[in-house]
Length: 353
Image (cartoon, rainbow, N blue to C red):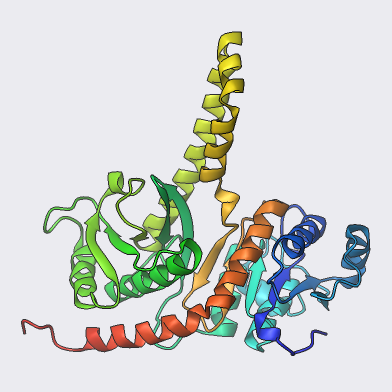
């Protein structure tokens, strides 16, 4: 068992859920502990019989910032979310979520089944007071830096007040992870002209202007603004956001493959590529989806960070770093205060009533 001393600052890592297996997770934990000395502790959640030999091999046995919480079952990618939560109560995913619920950890990091993780987080941690729906926040590259995309897939049928909450959630996450004190928020639509977009966009735009003291709202944006140095937080519903995120990730792979093919087309190009290796490596790092490791599910009474199922040790290490930053910033307390103020403003009559 994990001791409760300073437990709220620990990161609970689901060791069993990723496609690459627990060995990759253990390697990621080793990297994180060696690279980030301010992490107070990590709890690996999974089958002790599997994890102990891996920890011995990695030289982590006896590491005072690392503990193991035994869980005998695994939620697989093929499991149906609700059935998995009911039938596999001793799974590594469920036990990791319960550590956060019981304040024995501050954040869950998991590469496991997305639907089960979202359902488990929502059902066991419950929504933060005043927040109706959770939202996934993803960090994507843009000209001059990065931006936060929210919602990246948690709530495809959003209402205007949900998008207002997304703007607040995304702004706080942007401050923590990107270090931007007053993030510029844009509402994703099909055009910036007055009246462009559907009823959801029109009403959300009005509501975002009403809570203007809480966020730095820049107004509506459209597709060609997203990757320009225009805003720091892009707000949309989960349907649009998930399409945007997956399209960007596939486009990165497409251009990477196409660039490699063209640079190897003849010896002269290959020589030029070799001379430009430093620039290509820098570009690769900037657009690498693994740079921030995963997407947090925001709006819950607790923190959950979802990493890709196929995450490498470097991606999981970065997810652990992000989890540590979320704990250190006490992000949820700050979010709760702003959500309460926003809901009061939304409930009040409009100024021109």
